Image 1 (cartoon, rainbow, N blue to C red):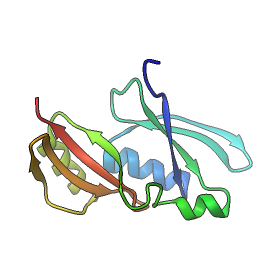
Image 2: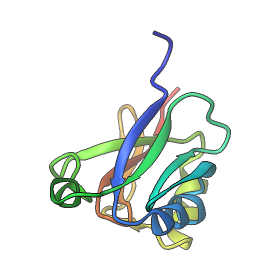
Image 3: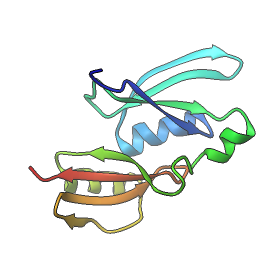
Length: 129
């Protein structure tokens, strides 16, 4: 199996999630297909990514609504790798992304935790060569 194609992220609103991931994080909107009755197939990905992408799925019941923003129980559950931490950190902060800490310089690379519009925790990470 060569790669994971999609990972689902349950969101409260399609349009708000699209704006956050495209305008603030800098992802591309890959697909937005309307299936009617309020259902859409919305896929975003980091610019240039050809493998793993994120399916933004709007919560449609109480269990899913309760999971929005807490899909990994409060742990960092998503890791956004970069080849230029300073560039992306500065751009994301300027766009209004909330970072929960200052950048840390770890043996494996430079990292800072940020949260998405619903409170899911992400690492922005530049790995050492």
